Amino acid sequence: MSNRQLPLNCVDKCLLAMDRANEPMIIHAMLCLEGKIDSERLGSAVAQAQEIYPVMRTLIRSNGLRTSREIQDGSRDGVLTVQDLSGDGEVDHNSQLFDWMNQPMDPREVSPLRVFLLRRNGRESLLVFSFHHSSTDGVRATLFVKTVVELYNNGTAQASLESQEIRITRKGDELVEFANSQRSRVGGYYLRMASALFKRFVIDAMAPPTRVHHDRTGSSRRLHYCFETISTEELDSIESKAKSVDVMLNDIILAACYRTVERWNRKHGRRSQRIFIMAPVNMRPKGYRNVVSNQAAWISPSTSPRDRQDPVRLLQKVNADTREAAKNRTAFSLIYYFYLCSQFPLSIMRLVCRLLIVSRIYVNSIIVTNVGVIWPKPNSEEAALTNLGDARIVNFTGSAPVVTPMGLCVCVNLYNRKMNVSLTYRNALFSDEKAQEFLRMLVDEIRDYKTEPEAA
Image (cartoon, rainbow, N blue to C red):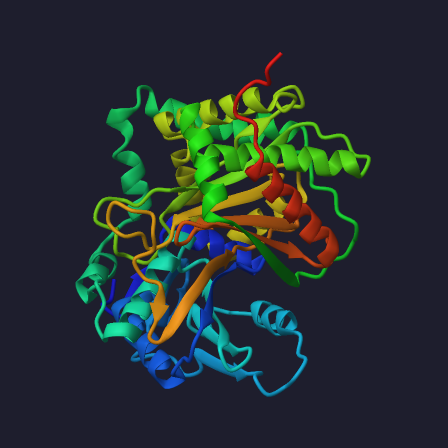
């Protein structure tokens, strides 16, 4: 491997194949700001961060069966775009954001990063970092954004150039090596991996998953986005309820999503059978803490109508299933599947992705990705970074890719002791009003989730 090239791990390559199969794989991190932003200083901070994380200044190159990233000298022109709407009167800021989100990004032609500063008025701005998903996952995207903020504020960052050498100099696939390292921790490891894959691609594929009812039918890939925030006081209450019954906050989020899908479908006259939620799992191989790449796999826990009748029993099941998946390293089974697929040329992988999309093998009803706590202080869930120079970072939200069979995706994070719940959706399938209604229903379910049986 040349010192000007970065390898793609198996998840990188599969996400790249999904993108080639007309399923745009772009993720966005969005900062709502109050105060003035120096665009020249911001552009300089982005360029310095690209030097620290060279994956963000690469182009995809293929040589026969081999695909890699070629590092480009310096930062790429046009990474930062600034749009000032402060003097334009009544302007639909959402339409500007949606237009930006839906711009194509071909990592063969442009770097897998672009940044958008939208000045809404003299005091308020929106800063959007857009990443091609084949270059990084959501958790590591926030690491890159953190580096940009630190560089803007101080001219230095905690991350170092040395942290990236592990990718430039390594041989083999770090995710597969990490998966193999789990063998000693799980009895009958490879048999469990094979069993999990058989269940996912054979047993679960025999019956199609319940889909979220939508009010439109169209083929456009155009995405829209909305979010709601759960206050600090409400979050404290939710966390107290979770702690009182020995479950995780993420368990409540997942359980609430199951019930929301069922309630939504019932409201529109549809019966829900098995509901599958795709939930990303943060892996992070040893030594990769400060490396920007994809270090995640997925699990797809399912529930039946009977499971969802009682919210308390549903929560217990979700907690038990996720604990079991963690104990048996179920998410690693997909790493082996991705690795097998990644041995084929991208053209073959693209056909496999199309097969998964159009067939019943794609077994998920909806994606719920929880990025976790954004930039926490040590031993605290308050944000360590709350300003970009003289501007205050009011909020931090995210948007994940939306795959055709599902039509929408939920992204959750905690920033400065507030929970942000974002919904990204295909506007060809969900009107803005319907999407916002679904989001409100989900947020209400999270706020009010019952964790204990009602008194007789």
